[in-house]
Image 1 (cartoon, rainbow, N blue to C red):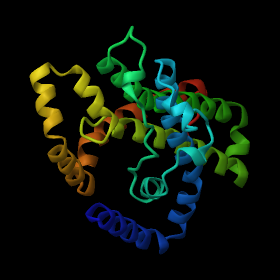
Image 2 (image 1 turned 30 degrees about the vertical axis):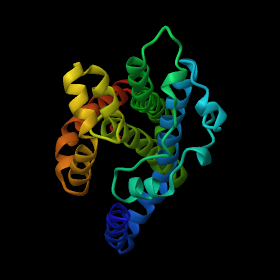
Image 3 (image 1 turned 60 degrees about the horizontal axis):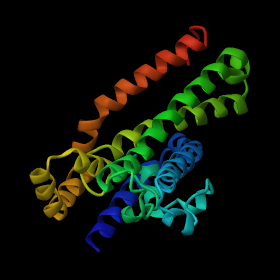
Image 4 (image 1 turned 90 degrees about the vertical axis):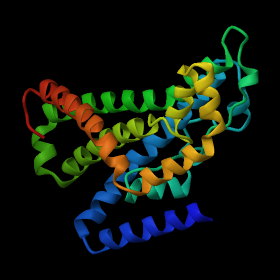
Length: 241
């Protein structure tokens, strides 16, 4: 209940800010495709890797698909839309089903890492798409409303994937980064981490609802976006976006 109250307060406060600014409402609408793509492919990547490692749980639950309806969590999507951080429906796995050639610890880490890696790959792919679009359709992109909107949508796809990928690598439960960290920790540290997951979850909520999360990951997101911008700039033939 406490978490739900926090979510509602965040959504209402941000909605009020957006409601009075038509430009922000347009930005929200153009961001929706990026959110659907980022969350869908992120969760699909978890399911795909788990399936390849021998766990058929995601397949049996219908998660081995690119159908957004199977992966979208309405609260997580709305928060990603208004706040900038959100989530999809978690992919359930059973590590005991992993092939015997891989340890449960390593398998969990690979499944968790698959989501953020997918987001970064999508960011690179759509950066190349945007660069080619600007190179060969620059006039259409800047003079035609449809062309401009399309360029804006692609830019949101890039930025949302970068943000979601970096955010999920924060090493706190319930994020992917926590499972990756557990796999890397020595036994004693791993035991402490596992025994204090509830406390660490509270820490996550605190940094999430305050500016701390933004302060921590903004430099990383900025660095990745700078790299992608240079990639776009190079491919597009030095045409500024």
